[in-house]
Length: 312
Image (cartoon, rainbow, N blue to C red; front, side, top):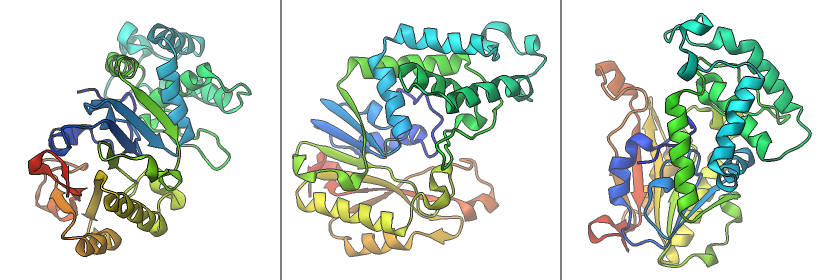
């Protein structure tokens, strides 16, 4: 399994052992809508992976990894770390920086991180090195997250970690995979997608922001009722065309229920199958109190999983 080089909110890496066996076995093109960290699509065996997301920063970052030689990517990463005098615990250890792993590296890296972030936000040249710089910022940012404000500025504060050996290994494996397989990274909204280009040998997977959960991508009206309705209509349209799909979503979370999704599933009970997944992002070893707030994460499919994914 290849894990995303990004710590993307809602990433499905831990769910892959449940999700992947439910996908059709014979797929020409796998369309990964709302691809996010790409944890799902990057691990699907098909002739071509097409990753789609409307976050242009994310897509251009992946295109940078795809188009540059891996050696160059890592040279630039370590050059930027050295230029801004950020920590490198994998080489020097925590003691060298007067820190320990429990407290983290935030105090040491804060000033250097702020300079790097300011230079990035004021950068006039948008090229491959710009996106490698963005990756270094993400690695050193709070929880390795991605967040831009309305002015287009990266605005997360410094985090506790740096470009450690685990981050190095994940990025290396990810670059190897996208260099050795047929992949496309497309910046687009699902509403702009031409469904007439799909064939019955294609497979569509959608992992949208969850309407009833809180995450950075869901702030300031990032995903609303209208978006949810539009996506479900989109899936209905490709179902009518005989195209197989799978939808990841959450039916309930912390006492809230996604009424739009629930009503849609009721209307399509004879066409779509709901598979409840065994997972909690909060804590997989719940106590009694945790069970009340646990999310009901589901995979909705429009094909018979027992028959290898034949369209219904």
